[in-house]
Image 1 (cartoon, rainbow, N blue to C red):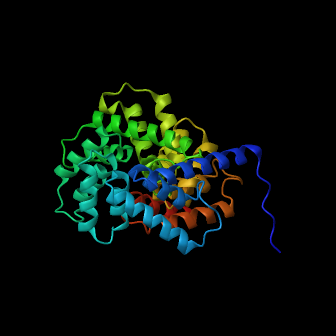
Image 2 (image 1 turned 45 degrees about the vertical axis):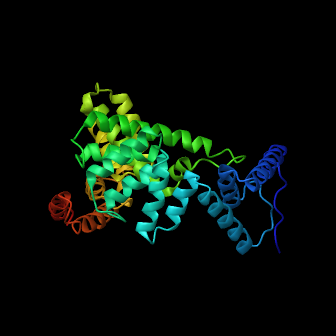
Image 3 (image 1 turned 135 degrees about the vertical axis):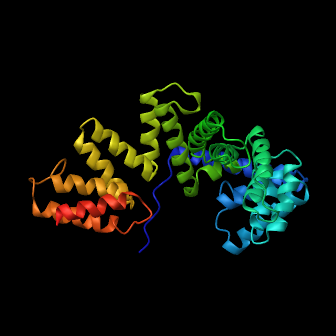
Length: 333
């Protein structure tokens, strides 16, 4: 027995009506040869925003591709980048479409060209060229390029190392990501391609890394920043909340340093669950000492929990902490 969908609220009905109105307007303009309207129709069909309901999947997909191809042929740069993305299996073809969009100053095309040179996909690998295109993309307003270029400045890849520039670019990226998440909730019109990309799960790790870098700058004064512990803690917590294991370990360490055992255990538990060797070793220490955990000192269950954590940590031979895990195993046994 199928459950009936809950009735739509007045606000939802209003948004749907406005979306349908925009769809019909774009359809009229697209039929007259407006390239941007053709691309918007593709996006609306792709996202099911304002378009006719009940279309069979094969019909809807065919309609999507028809309007996208028409937008490509009419020279719309958003469509050219999308077409390149859809030809990812053929890097040379993809790059040719990114280049067409880039020649129009399109941030997405420039960013994708930068990625192609960075990875050597469809072109000869060249970090300096990658950085050059990423810079142009940043200047054109593509926020994804801010992250890519920040990483290059951080590691001195294709450019001279510059912590201050990395900080500014990471800050631009995190600010734009927050803005993108907010704007993505507006279902009347599809969000732009860069903001749509920012909201994908795959960018969660990048955001976490950016917040971690910013936090370290505030903590340590890197990049010419004044030390601001409160701001550093704010970004570190955000990084940890986004799933960055290193940030979880650092939060655990800072809580331990100020004697807040319960919070330290909470953070190390999270990082241990994410397979952090640091988290596993530190959490094992708390269990073996009976600090910040339930049970008395010497509790057999706590020792057993510590053993399990340490036996996993000793296998992580690429992490220096595995040496400490070996030493601690001798204590719990």
